[in-house]
Image (cartoon, rainbow, N blue to C red; front, side, top):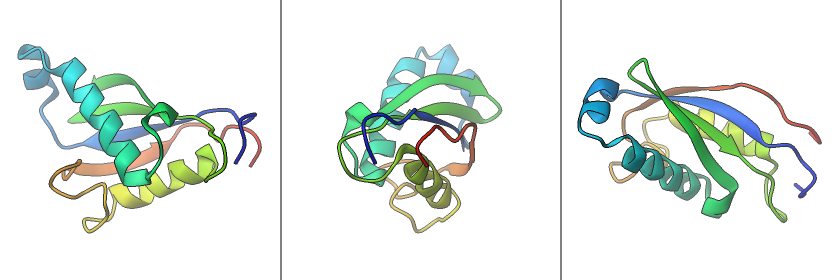
Length: 113
């Protein structure tokens, strides 16, 4: 992993009611919750994670994983995020993080793999 690597974008699907989040004005708070949960589950500084959008379809969060000093590459972290999203026993799916994560799709591979 190095700083020259391109960010990798994932779509993380979460079984929550998008309309209800929107109606209660909770989308921004939800975005920051997803960001901190993903960083915690992956064990990386929050600065490496960005949630660039939320869309309906349950909730689909667009998560961007940036390169950092040392540690796993953005693509490696994206693969780990997808693995955790599909594993009910993973750190990501614990009650305090995103227990209703349903799945994840990597949108691009970045460079430097």
